[in-house]
Image (tube, rainbow, N blue to C red; front, side, top):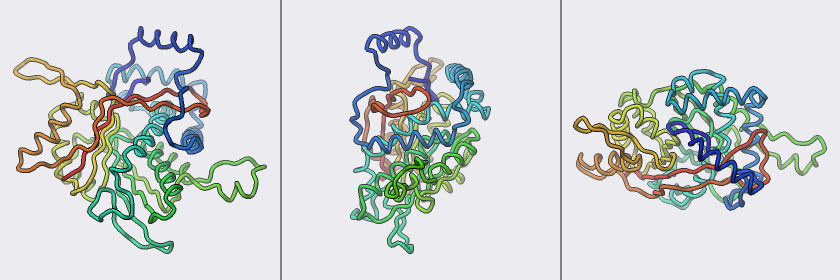
Length: 364
């Protein structure tokens, strides 16, 4: 799999073996059984969003730019990897589409924990604020996606909202307000993706009137709003973080936590403690990262490596309880899962499957 933010580049020997095995089997790694439960048409819509929003980067020059980005990521030179506009566009074009489909699957998997049903208690997670509009009863859901400038979370939540609307016609209408935060300036990427999400899909001029009438945006502008904020999570003071998170029902941290630990373990620990203080009761915290991620800690002049999951649990479930009460309940935890791209999906460049670890917590 391609290097992730905060991850490492694949071993060259293992990569060679992987390619050799793939060639022997006569199939690409993106091939696999469609076991996601997500309609294939919706997954293709997600890929089309990226293709249409970032079409200017799907050219022959992309390969060389991606190699430069990979090298910076491998060297953990994140300022360089995300310091140029062409790098950001190349990264979003290459890795965000698979991530978006994987995140869509993750959101679908944890739907019982999100408690989006209208029949749930108002105190439950993601129940949102209630407001009335001219179409009837609506519920607004505030989401903060941290380290999410590359657009995968935005597109995944738009597709998730689309799927909820298609499968729950009797539900109260949902309005998703997404705030994405990242240290790099992804504003143009976010703007292009949000625009593509709100547009009607491109149809053949020969499409029937019925198909044209059923052709809807991935998310209606009135029901899906996204904002971008350029900030360094580890340098935000408590008041800034509280303003950002005090009304949020769900916080996501996707393929970012290990990068934060690699930057500063103490600052990341402080950030996680403040997160628990800022969030309201019932809010959810979703962490997704590369499996097997480790961070190095110095104790008494000696270095020791700890699994990212252990450090996360220490910050949330142990350290937070020292202040006089448990702040977090763990709802989901899995050290290794796969999202495998189904067959028949179309995208101009080759995509790969996604392996990840997942942890979901609820604020008590």
